[in-house]
Image (tube, rainbow, N blue to C red):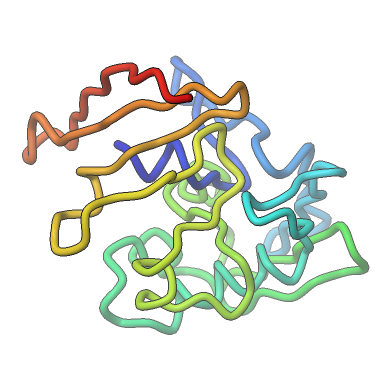
Length: 173
């Protein structure tokens, strides 16, 4: 879907459904209840601000505490999220959870302090596409996306049930 082109998780899944690094370059489990994710250096949000461990931790905490967020069920076994230095996110689970890295695929990272309202007004992710704009009053997926090369794409939802979208290239001066 469009959001996964704009925002990224700490970990994503490869074609075999195995967790692979995205914003986290590595992770370890020093004990059965603790996961430590090391962030990829040099990552920036589309507004130019650097990605920090606090951004990632706040994103996970937001999913745990905000009842109206659909993806919160993927973090249902998480007891707490903290940071360790500038580049590590520490996740403590209630019980051993071998699936946590796979579940984090559904937890997109947003800047610390983001709310549902602020994200509707201005999308600000780390993904390969940035939202160049969308028509107010229209669903978010009916958006114009831009990539770093300057090319832009007009995107519309083509399948609500499948979260499919289609984009057409638009040349802009």
